Image (cartoon, rainbow, N blue to C red):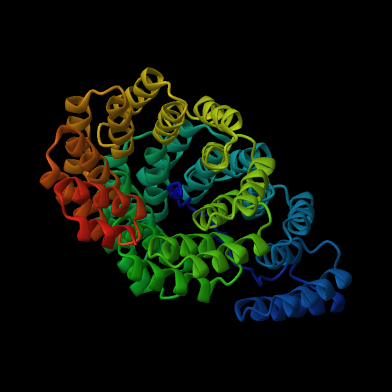
Length: 503
């Protein structure tokens, strides 16, 4: 079984709240060079507002060559470098602005943001503290400091800062969104949804709040509400690749494979280098039964990100289904080389080892999978299957029982326990387990086939043939069910029907 991707948490991002300033120097009498520096600074600010960042930086360079003590030009150049993603260079310019003007609150605020972007969280918090000494009631700074504290792992302190920001400015949407993220992490999903909703009320075009609320709704099992929120985000921003990707995952949960594929197509169109999107689209193709398309997408996911363990595992599953045992093992081995604690790959590698007769290796891998994930019901089910094949029927029943304790609706465990009971000649127990498996999944061809065998042993040949029929109707390529139906028909005296099934 291919793993579903773990639920994403959309984190808030804090942006600079200040734009370049083109103010005159405090001196009433400017030198010629000073006036020229002011002109270059003003020109740089004009270019900055038109998103000509390189042109703006060039003008600020000219201003600073003419007037090396021009604090505002350093500050403005820092903003332009920040927007280009040159955070260390931006910090250098903010340093100079602060050196020239220690009371420069905006420089402290924006230097904090730059430090946040290079993961200097202590430095960011220190700069926010300095800014708050200069302006104690600035809600933007409280919000920014809350974000740095959240990223540092101090969720309670972050929530306190977001709350202070809201108290200072109840009409500012960002602190509600950010507080919702922190509350969601603490498990207070209802409070998070309330905060995301308030953020949307204050800023109806806040796509981030829609996205975050979708995650919260999904975690509460409200998939349709989550999809509605993503619809809203995409109406506002039709190029929101992450929203397409997440909506595709939710549609996959609903087994709307065509809808999921359409969303993954859009996610890839807007973000063609997304290894995750190719992997997810590959999963959708896999579940639609198109192994070739799935493998192509997994190949591409690995090409983009050679460390994508899920893509290796998933491609291994495609190869396993094709009985390309060597190729499947190679992919599972690669996944485990990248992440030795990846339980899915351990379990899947065990399946291949069991299928190829390497039972000791399979037992070791299933056991390792359970060590990595003690609630891996599939590993318990596979151990039950392996022990049944070895003739250890009591051991098989024990492992199946453990799987059922974890997941009462795990059909494989009921099937496996039924097989072990069948081998122990407990036909009543086997029949009860096959019945339970079919209550959970009426399309389980293996349960129909297995129940047919139990009915045949009890002498109820008509019921046996009917169950074999149902297994074959679900899966026309189910050769074992055809073989079993042939012998049931033979026991009924239907020689021609038996010959037809056999040949």
